[in-house]
Length: 118
Image (cartoon, rainbow, N blue to C red; front, side, top):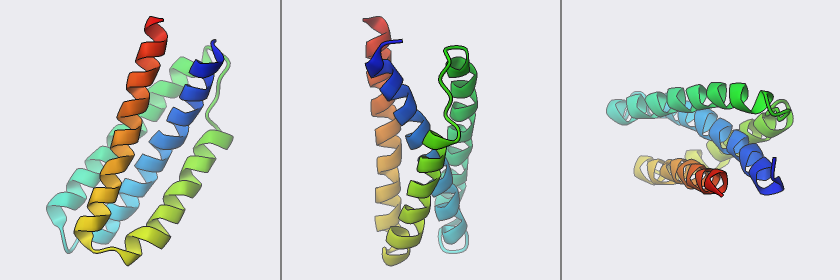
């Protein structure tokens, strides 16, 4: 495995776990005030959970594991984001910041796809 691919996959573990946990926590906070957005956040969290499951099966065969370090770091990032940032923002601001989680994951997936083609 090329070192860039190794780093990218480890980063994908971190960002997918961060997205999963952050979105689930934010959905819990928004449940009463913004039910539709909370449902979308829960759905996105479920997709990130599925991505992590698929990633584990692919990378384990190559000797790369996301636990405990990479996913643990992602969980810590989500916790800090949820407790420090989201609580100080209004709902629309928190949702815009949460959208950045997906941008990071999608950009990383595009990068990994380009690496795989090379």
